[in-house]
Image 1 (cartoon, one colour):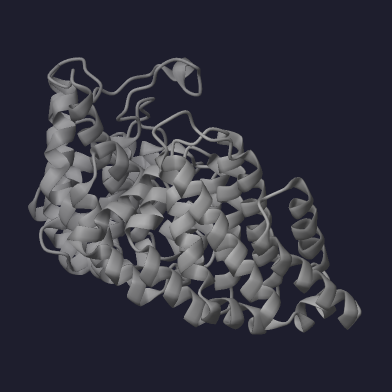
Image 2 (cartoon, rainbow, N blue to C red):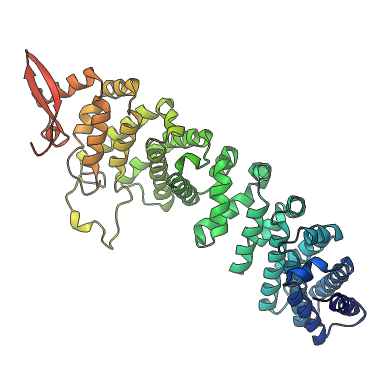
Length: 481
């Protein structure tokens, strides 16, 4: 675009400062916005044009705030809102792939003026709700474009917005505005800023992001914030978890589970300290699941607490499924004994009377539309975790034997519609418990000969007992042999 045209538009913007807002002014700004879509024009815009635009934005901000403070009938502000939105659009367009303009707008003071105006719009009771939402969206988009690839802009936005303005914008009643605000937050975040968020006095912003993950899962930016930033900070995870309801904890754990299942799990970014925290939380809270079978779980809070434990178990199973960076959990203090003991308690309760922990053969209900038990698969996952913790670990193999866990797992090897794939997980656990462990092999063989319980499933697990030389030998066999 010719320099003459550039100067004409700049002069027209400056002319707005000497007149009351009119509809023609909106066209001037729209022309400027459209021109800024052209890269050559963007690169040639003079500083004076942006200075005039900032003065227009500042004037409009003052008029809107004056209208909001009027105690009489609200003044019509539709035109001012349209003009403000167009200013934001021009600012937004000027920053596209232009480090020069990003730096220029930052130096002129656009960030402070824009943030104060956005905060006012978010909290005002002016008429024309649609106009307010449109202006909010454009202003937040400007901040996003300003921050992309420009560290100084990111830092300034963070300094002026954290935590209160971010918290307010993420609470907007307009879903698009919330999505754009999430984008700005994601763009600004880095390791140091996540550390700022983990401080107790600032934790509400992180909790707000997690609330959006739960209530508006289609907002991709909030999920990215949680998975790419939050889960990499053990301090933030622990402080969030402490301040969350059980329902919110389940959301956090579901995101953690999904992150662990990413194809490139070695690069999931979840630190060991988060794994230790998950293990500790499971150990301290796992007893809540037992209340589900006693009839005392009538309150929603008790149910949610039990569901949290179930989610913790799912995460631990995934972490210990041959993910090398988390296999230190095999040595986590008392994790294995706690899991074996919980399996004992659940199994005993299920046998004592008919309840949700009892084995069942009601396969017609699987995959149906009816209400399913919250503990579907819980025993199977306990056995899976035990098997994981004993993989190539002689100390844990021995510990399970000492805790009388071998007959317990064998007793849970039959098909159970309340625990899909429990037979397969029992096979997996028994194999891990017997591998290169003569004492465990002898114990299982002796159990088969004495027959204190129904161990006919041993063959289904792929083993057979053979007497040889006055002793017992446990051999692996093919199931179809």
